[in-house]
Every structure is written in structure tokens, then in C-alpha cells.
Length: 358
Image 1 (cartoon, rainbow, N blue to C red):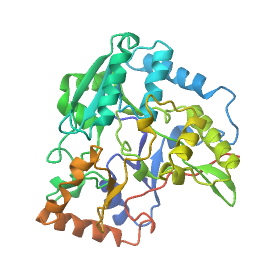
Image 2: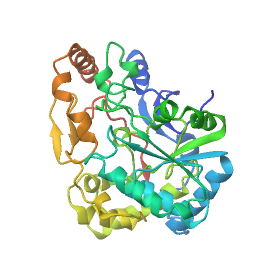
Image 3: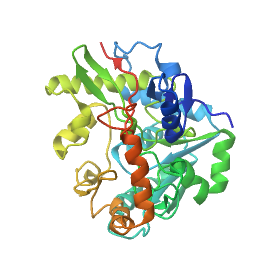
Image 4: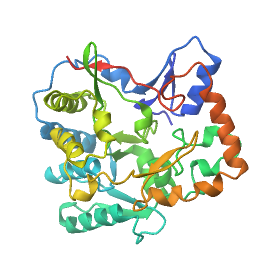
């Protein structure tokens, strides 16, 4: 299958959807520069300095219409969070049908750490008359002994998720394994829609600009995904970046990512609502999902005992005593020491091109 280039990694003129392969190629070809790729072939010619006149809601509505016309099968990955909930609401508002809505839970759907999933299912049930017959796909996420989580590492890092997360990363493989019939429809002419991504806006000596670090998005490099705010037409992304920029100016801030990762619920929601995100429950913008940390030289990760990520974090102590851990740590340590890569993020974080907002 020939994939359309959306997100991935580029070394010289060579494009990859597997970051480890991109890293290997970069090491063997040190003369080439490298970057995270984000719709570059389509976005580079656009004017990012001027805010589009249409409202964010109108642009989101037009994008829903575009996706419905472009694909035979639309699958929405719905977590209940403010991003995917905004996408769902925009389809509902415009009476545009989604064919399938996926909700993934961790291990035990009734466990206390699946509260987000439980709220999401309650919301879908309450709005079932507005979903135009969309089929709800409710299934377990790939477990820690499935997929590409680090607990499965044996010898080849190519098969490990590039963010080195405890859990499997990838809506595509989740769908392929749990719902193979739906996956085949997506392969034929369909897409998996995710609520990605928030605008990442910063300021340097030249002014405000948009730039992504691949590490901030688990969905990077999955060619069957339509990351809702990152379509081939950048107008929607440009709009939300300008709205985020206006919030930064008003609040005398210079970095949206700092706000996203803070524990200040009020500030977090103020920024999100400024570029049009909608919530269906306060739970999803109360910053309580990253309160605890697994500390490790290479695999530190944040989690919270009341969220599903705690299920995967609880396996770390035992895994740390295995050959799997030591072999993967050795491999990552070697790559991190290579002079080719960005010092701040090591091999973890590759940057997209900067796009200045005027």
C-alpha cells in the first residue's frame, strides 16, 4: 500500500513512518539533516502570518464535511477528552455521520482507573439519538504483553514504540487486532480520526511561531490516521495557532506547552477554551492524570493511580529486573550518546519546521 505522507520523520529527502529506521539512516548518513515531518509538502507554501477570517467552529465544520466526502469509512477514536470530544461535537452539530466510534479501555472496563472511559460511554449513550447510527466499538487496549510496548522488547528496537512507553502505541494496530473487519474497510478507503493536536506555539527573538516535537503526540507516524487539526489544508491549524498566540499575548506567556503540562487546571482550561475546545465533564480538564512518576534513566513516565496508565506503570519494577530491560536500556543509551541528535530530547524528540505567525 502506498501511504500519503502526513506525519513521520525525514532524513535528507528520505521519508519514514518508523522513527527507529529514520534514526538508523541518520546515523549512517551523517551528512543529512533530520526533522519530524508534518504535512510539509502541503503546508510550506501557505501563509501562516495571517489569521484566517472564518471562525474556528466554521473551519472545524468544513473539515468534518471534507472528511466525510473524502472517505467511505470514518472511524473516530473517542476518549471523552476535550480534543476528541470537540471533534465528536462538531460532527453532531452538523449532522454528519461517523461510521464507527472506538473507545478503548485498560484491562478491566469497570476498574476505578477507567473513569474516563466510563464517562465517555455514558456521554455516547446519552447522545445516541444524535450519532446517526454510528456503531460503538468498545474494546480493551492492547495489554502490556501485546503490541509494541517496551515490556515486549527482545532484541530488535524496530518493533518497539518510538516513545518508549510502557503501553502499546498505535490506534491502527489496536483496530487491526480487535476489529479486523473494520480495519479492512479503513484500508480500502477510510481513515481513523483522532483529536490531534493542540496548537504548540512559542516565542523567540523573531516572534511567535508554531512548532511540534514529535514526542508530544503518540499518533505521529501512523499513515491511516487523520489527526483532526492537522489535515492537508493547514487553514484550521493556522486558525487555532493564532487563537493560541492571542491567548499567550493577553496572558503574558510565551509557551503553550508549558501550560499544557502544568498542574494549573484553571489556566489549562482557559487556554484550551480560547481555541474552541469543548468538554462534556470537568474530569477531563482537571489536571490529575500525571501526578506520579516512574523514575528511570531512560524510561521515566508520569501516571496516576486513578487512571489507566497506572495499570501499565505497575509492571515496571518487575520488568526492570529482566534481560529485556537491560538490553533495551543498552540500546537506548548507545543512541542517546550519538552526537547526531538533539541534546535536549536525545533521540526522543525531533522537531518540525518552525512556521512563524507574523
